[in-house]
Image 1 (cartoon, rainbow over the protein chains, first blue to last red):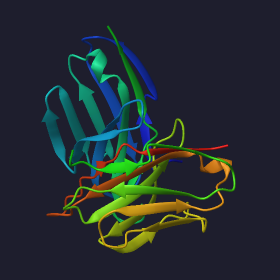
Image 2 (cartoon, each protein chain N blue to C red; image 1 turned 30 degrees about the vertical axis):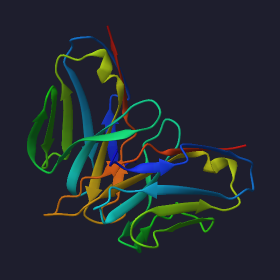
Image 3 (tube, one colour; image 1 turned 90 degrees about the horizontal axis):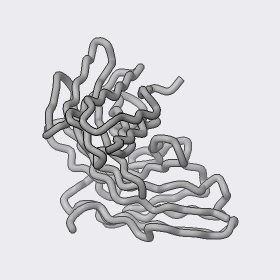
Length: 112
Length: 115
């Protein structure tokens, strides 16, 4: 069983829809990261959070430490949001002492 | 551009050859990480440095792999006697630890194809 699980694996939606991507983890963490990866490989850090909620533009990330669950929301989705969204955690032990442990990613396609 | 850079961006090699990749982190970042990502999967941790010291290596890093960061700035990742299973995207990230935060900034990656 992977330590970081994401759902869904693939998501296709229409422009303007509200998008939710979920991440569950099974280990103790010091931080959870949401990353965006476009075709070609480049990874951009969207959020790093250890509690509560963060918002940046149309993106919102929440985390529930007790339930070991985080969600990434995209409001008013746009075709340029199409990318792979990856959840990653920094574990208290293992995972390379601050090296990230990643989920497999959610492949999001927003159709015009 | 003052982000993380990686060279080369693409490398095609024949099985059995040695390859070396370079990562230049953001200049004030003291931590540097190497990850590997195979097609359709999330990245996996390989190793990391704090300044010039290599502090941890994943068991994924076989003895054919070696990484260095000799002056605490750029890093190299060498793969000896490449195998087809080494084909992957090799990602580098850097960070500066402050107040317990460790936000990592990623480079564009080096895509390795072993024929």
